[in-house]
Length: 103
Image (cartoon, rainbow, N blue to C red; front, side):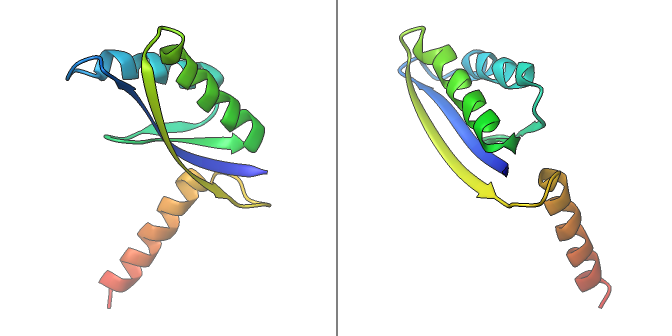
């Protein structure tokens, strides 16, 4: 079942500069081969439920296995019968904006 997960995997107690730790997380997500987009505070991952959840687990454990306390926040959008919704949702929004701006 197609799923988009917005996930924030955050290391705790490692200081103010989190980018090196987040880079480790993103490398795990990247290696999964699933479509993803990283934003300032969340990363979106799209694919089948089990595959997406496995990536979230693997990305979380890359920090936890180093003994780092790790906090995970997620939001899921499950839409049967659809694919490529990460881009499709943006396309839908842009069309709606263009329509409303044109009035």
